[in-house]
Length: 110
Image 1 (cartoon, rainbow, N blue to C red):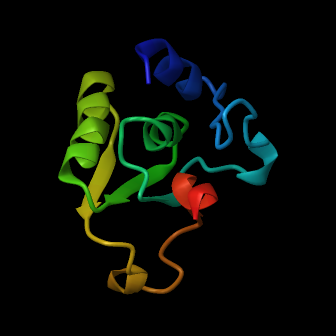
Image 2 (spheres, rainbow, N blue to C red):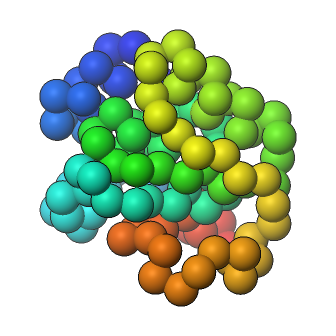
């Protein structure tokens, strides 16, 4: 994510894309400001950064330390607060109802 995209997200102008070209309708997310959001297997400095800039309380959860490092790079560059968890997709490590929303961008692949 570029600095401009992060700034736009901070102003409420954000979108995420799951298919090659079509953004997810923003209304599907609801108002994410101040709400816990889990980025499941979504490390990489992309969607979770936008969600954090838009005001969500974000946890990036990925099995790859390299992917988490990309999220951390963008967060440090743009002053975003993101929590990082490394692990496989077994969500039992989190309490039930820990998150308002779980965003799993690679689910389309499965």
